[in-house]
Image (tube, rainbow, N blue to C red):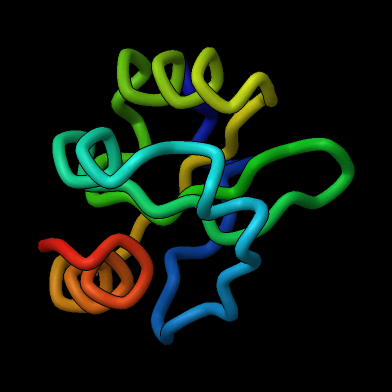
Length: 90
């Protein structure tokens, strides 16, 4: 279970997206999981998600990316923008 006390603040504006982070998963996976990797910090992949407590999605991304994952809550509209810009899909 994810501890809400240690979860990062939700995204309230569009983050700068690192191309290496975004390339860690494909467009189909990003769309299906409603997730956009946007940064790698201290060896952890930071991922904007509608459901950052979805441990199945977190595990799937971690396996694909071969990195530990920190899911970060992102509003649906903002996530849609990120998916369009970085994966060409919504």
